[in-house]
Amino acid sequence: MVKKMSQEGINFLITNLKAFYLVWVILILSNHGGVINVYLLT
Image 1 (cartoon, rainbow, N blue to C red):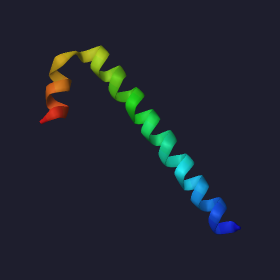
Image 2 (spheres, helix red, strand yellow; image 1 turned 45 degrees about the vertical axis):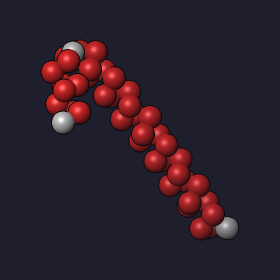
Image 3 (cartoon, rainbow, N blue to C red; image 1 turned 90 degrees about the horizontal axis):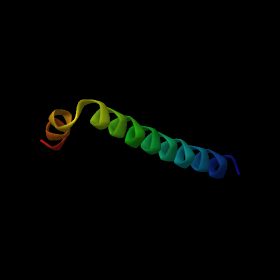
Image 4 (cartoon, rainbow, N blue to C red; image 1 turned 60 degrees about the vertical axis):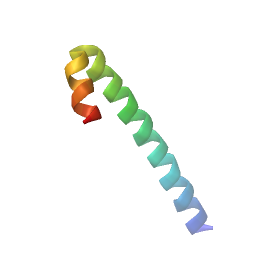
């Protein structure tokens, strides 16, 4: 029971971190344009 709960919590946290990271990247790209985009792709 506890392992199942903790696993679900970890998955939930990872999902939130991925979503937060995507939003953060989109904001940076929209603020700074193509230079950061090229930097991230290399």
